[in-house]
Length: 218
Ligand SMILES: *[C@@H]1O[C@H](CO)[C@@H](O)[C@H](O)[C@H]1NC(C)=O
Ligand SMILES: *[C@@H]1O[C@H](CO)[C@@H](O)[C@H](O)[C@H]1NC(C)=O
Image 1 (spheres, helix red, strand yellow):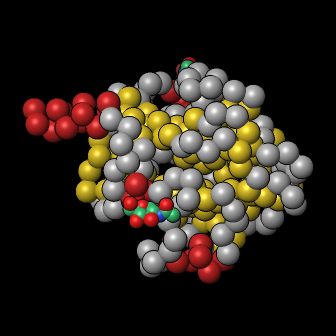
Image 2 (image 1 turned 60 degrees about the vertical axis):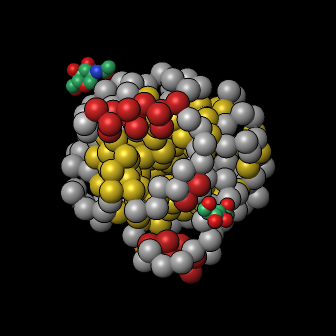
Image 3 (image 1 turned 90 degrees about the horizontal axis):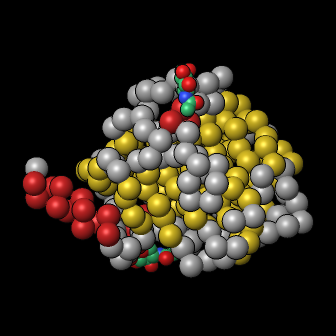
């Protein structure tokens, strides 16, 4: 246990890329502080795909992914809400997407795509696409980027709300600077070979842990 805590502290300090293949982050309790901060040197994104896998027993709203810049705290925010839908914000603009097959205590693959030219967002739950809906077109995500897992940033890097915190496990978090094709998304869902994210790569992830978040075998 002591060694584990030491390892935890070491990983908390170092922002050296780590290969998390086969691992997951476990968020064991509701807090307004515990989170994982992911770092990227990218400052501009004109299109994105975020994919991750989640496992939870939460019926209340909970945050799956929060990307903030100083000018937009909800530059990308993906929340699973209490009504079984996804609330997605891109460039601070909100859209509601149905997520009726999101079951408790089950691993789900959630991929979200957006591009600034069409302005359309789409959520793929376990490879099933949602309707494509308009959020924000014409402007890019730009500025220093802070990405947080486990909490919703209501300010840049902070402003966490315990009632939107995540409890459960998250794994295989990738972020690309373009919209993946349906075939590539299906490869992610099926855990076949896919090209890792070129902005966030789970096999070479730079991160810092704050508070009680564990790295465990999946
Ligand atoms: C969180 O939710 C509980 C129960 O609904 C409520 O009593 C509490 O005030 C909320 N806390 C915050 C910080 O909003
Ligand atoms: C992701 O990380 C792995 C392991 O370091 C590396 O082999 C691969 O090239 C990376 N992929 C991208 C797209 O950065």
